[in-house]
Length: 351
View 1 (tube, rainbow, N blue to C red):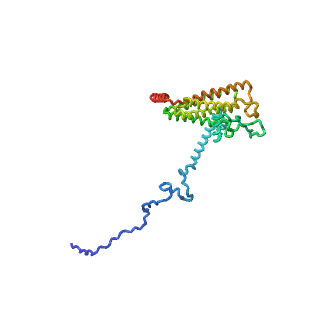
View 2: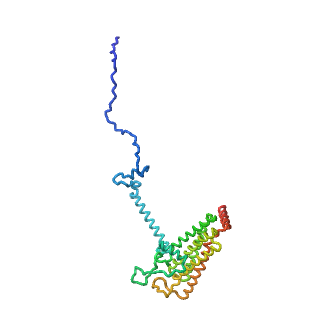
View 3: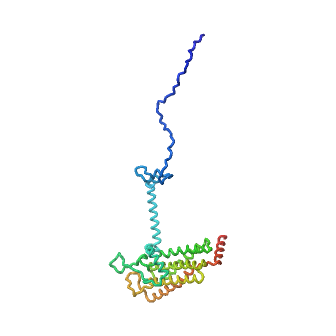
C-alpha cells in the first residue's frame, strides 16, 4: 500500500473568531450605590429624611403609620367596643357612688380659682377682722319669677363658701411635710409616711363619723349641710402645716416642743376655732332676724334645738379641734425619739 503525501502546513495560522451572541441579555447589570451626599439641614443622620423632605404630591407629611392600621375596619370595631365598655364602666361607677355622695354636689366644692385660694388661706389664718360671714345667694335661673328658689354661689365667687380643694391639698401636704421633716431630723424610716398617712386618715374618719352622728342628733337632714361640715373640718390642716413649718425653723430642728411650738400652736388653734365658730354659725344656727329668702335652705330652728346646736358648735370648734390638731402637730425632734424610731425600724426589719 502506498500512502498519499500530505500538503505542507501554511506558513501562518488563520485568526480565531469568538462567537458573537445573537440575543441581547436581559440580566440587569449590578452597580455599586452612589456615595451619600452631605446635607446641611437639621435632619442629617435621621432615618426619616426621605419622608420629611416632601416626596410625592403631599410634601412635608409622613407616610401612613402602621400601613393604614387606624383605617382598618377591625381596628375601628375594637375601638368602638372599648369605648362602649369604658362608658358603661364609668356610668356604673357614678351610679354606685351617687348612692352615698352626689357627684354634682361635689363639683360645687371644687369650683375654685387661684385668687379665692389665696384669700381663703389668709382668712383661715387671720379671721379676726373679717366681715361679713354670711354666704351669698342668688335666685335660680330656671324659675326667675319665683323668689323662693335660691342657691349658694360657688367658692370662686364667694369667699365665705366652703370648699374641699384646700382641705384635700392640705391633707396631702401635711403627709409629705411630716415625712420631710422626719428625714431632716435624721429620724426617717420607711414606715414614717405610712404611719403619718394612717394617723391623718383616722383623724379625718373619726371627725366625719362624729359629724354624721352630730347631724343625726341635731336633726340635720340636708346633705349640703353635711358636706359643708366635712369641708370645714379639713381647714385645720392649714394651721397644722403652719405650726410645723414655723416651729421647725424657730426651734432649729427640735420639732414643735418648747414654748415656741406651743405659742405657734396656740395661735393657729385659736384662729381655726374662731374661723369655724363664725362660719358654722350660719350653717347650724340660722338667724331669724336676717332677711333670709324663703326656700334658700337656711331655715330657723326651735329654741331647744338652737341650744343643742350651740353646744355642739362650741364643743366641735374648741374641744374636738384642739385634740385633733394636737395629735397631728406632735413633732418631737429630740435625740431620744430619733433613737426610738431607729430602733423600731431596725426591729421591724430584723423581724
